[in-house]
Structure formats: structure tokens, C-alpha cells
Length: 309
Ligand SMILES: [Zn+2]
Image (cartoon, rainbow, N blue to C red; front, side, top):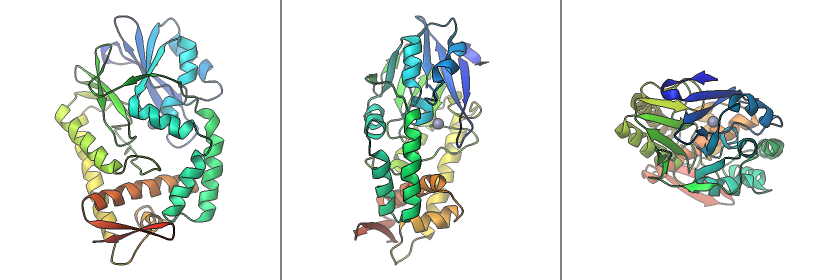
């Protein structure tokens, strides 16, 4: 556990896949502690939490977004602390739609197959997503948070993009950022089934809002604290502008699938899991180009393709 300015504590857990760790934060308050995010719901999640929470009265748990490494340990943390869980209203709805259903991995694989993902990669994804399901033990029936709300003196901000209903907390220039803003890593932004239609447009708007807000410090879900959040938001906007140009350059008069474009942008050497992120990210950029009038989407024979306009 690390002590941060303002009496905030950071608890870090290792992750078995992808990014190798996740941070959760404990915010001191007048009536007890607010825990932000809960890590992955590994079988020993409660044991992992116990030492960090020893002697602390946690009175509420806030979930920034429904991804497994943030919401997955929600139920364990709730049982251990007896605290009320709070989660963004849109985010909880999506959380239930995704993790509360039996056939999510089928819907995801069908969606990506419709964008040209080869059958054998889709089959691998179906298998992998099912294997992951036991580690997502989110807390049911949280108190729902909305933009402009307040949690023990912290302002609730809806900053969609990395997840449709992603929320952050802000007080005195400190942004508890979840994965909205990361320092050395570019937060993923992807188009998923039954999600908002233009996630990259959402994310660009959230980054612009972060620049206006100009917090002095952001505490992210992964990596080091962000000392210049507005500067980092500008970098991320530039990154996506460059990627939009590359995406536009991959399109021509003939129809191309999102999968084909993702191979131009991310190469051919990805396993099924990384290909899923690469394809979802490519689709977010293609849909942004459609919204900007720079690309057209067509649907025929159960396949979606894109052309330049
Ligand atoms: Zn994360």
C-alpha cells in the first residue's frame, strides 16, 4: 500500500493477463473511507483485500467502470466491508448486460465476425471469454451515480470513452481517473455490441473536458499518477488524430472489413485476445470517420464493410 498526498491510499494488485497490475484507491472522509475500484474477482480476492483494509472503516465502494479488473472484485469487497456500492447508472446497466448474461461471448464473437474476424479466431474468443467469467463477481444493485452527483465531497464526472458509462471523481484538483487517463499506456477505446455508437467521439469529448477541467493530479487505474492530466489528455487526442489519419488512409473505393483495416493498423501477428482489442479499436476509429463524413458503412450478406467517401 502507498500513501499519497491528501491522505489517499493506493492498493495495488497483480493481474494475470495483459497489464500486470491494477490500482484501487482509498479516500479518507469524514465518516470513514471510500474505496474506489475493487480489482479482479480472483478466488482469493477477499484474502487479498483483508490486509489493506485492516482497521479501516470503509463506508462506501465506488466503481469507475465495469471492466473485470475494476468491478470484478466488487462483491468480495462488499461482503468484507459491509459498505454500500455505488456505480454509474449507465455503467451498471452495461455491466449487467455484459456480465449478467450467459451468451455475452457469443454476441461479442458474432459482432466481430460480422466485421470480418475469421471463424477460427472467433471460436477462440468464445472459449476465452467463457473462461474469464468466474473472475467477474460484481456487486449487484448498487446505488446509481449520475453526472453532477456528489460522493462525500467528491464530484461525480461522467467521462465516457474507455467505457460507455465511465465515471471519475474530482475534488480540489485531484481526479480519481479509473482508466479514463493513464500515463504510459493509451486507454483502449473500442466499438462493442450494444454499446454507444461513437465511442471515440465520446472519448475525444471527455479528453477535451479534462483539458478544460485542468486537474493538478490524476490517479489512474494503472501506472504512475499523472502529474499533468491536461497535457496527457492533449497527447491522447493527438494520438487518436494520427490513428484516424492512418485509418482513413487504409480506405478506398472498394469495401474493406474492419478486420482487414485492423491488420493494416496493428499488423498480422496478434493472438485472438489482442486481435479482439485491435479490431474493436479499429471499429471505433472507422465509426468516428463515418460520423465525420469521411467514410461510409455498408451492410450486406451479414458483413459490414467501409469505403472512403
Ligand atoms: Zn483497467
